[in-house]
Image 1 (cartoon, rainbow, N blue to C red):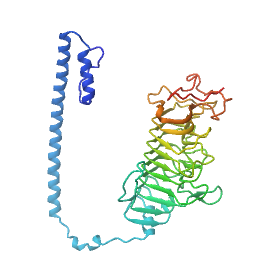
Image 2 (image 1 turned 60 degrees about the horizontal axis):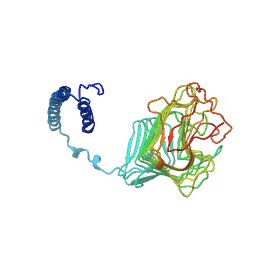
Image 3 (image 1 turned 120 degrees about the vertical axis):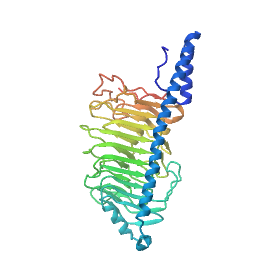
Length: 432
């Protein structure tokens, strides 16, 4: 079978894939003897798979039987050592805690705090390590537009503890940030000690109109792992919506992973960025399955791109949608670049966008490095229906609309010309 791989098992193939494989094997020959031998090969491997699965099932059955026996022993012990719960009536009394008592739990290590059907007022100061703060009874999804919560917390969030999770809560705060004066973003960090943060199915709502209302102010973060999953982020007015580890400066910590997935960014005016260090680039940054819905506030005058990642080894921007943007020649959808000599890659695919100067912007002047287009995961693609009123597919000089600049990355010997990409017929920006 010169055109088909010989397999020891078919158990990893779906019925559709196996049909294609089997038909290809049989159809590769015209003579009856060879076709019969191929069918014998297929039958033999299927019989071997059946025997192997039967053996594995026997082991599973034995383990399941033992688990039931173990459960019976545990129940015997529970009856033999039964506790009279009437001796502990306090266990069944409603626990009434003030807002401050609930919030104080978040300053303790290994705290697992759950609330339901409650509104809390006060700043959320999380100084304990391994802390989870959850609101029960939520429903819906951010991208679907029906994310709802039973609990509202009115106050800012200040994080110094590590391994922190916020889940299922609606946070409201009059966010603002003023250089050298009061600094009150929705989320901020202290001490450089937080290296693991997860935000899951939360709503973060700015209730104020300050000109610099920020969602995420990353100065003081310790980097590490930051995950934002299924959250609604709404009504933030700053040019800087999110800066993962800085306050729009040079990072001093590494992100092993930053991800924003299945979030809705609603009526926010600014950009989001995960910055990396040239000497020690971030591991992975991904923006996937998000909906950016610009609203009545529009885009900030200093808006540059919806998403940015820099000095990062693996960058992913896939399956996002943008609505309500206003076209600007120097406004892009996604920006990524690197000044590190360590090879890096970008995957751009399946993003549905409208009204941008460019889909992808990547500085490839001197001191910068072109992404590795030989990487298996590298991609620069869009279908015709995915771009509306977008001027360029990519631009590979900086400033991004300066036609006098020259494509001249430090690794030009390996990548003598910028990535062409497949941007639904859109051309790249014409540089010198």
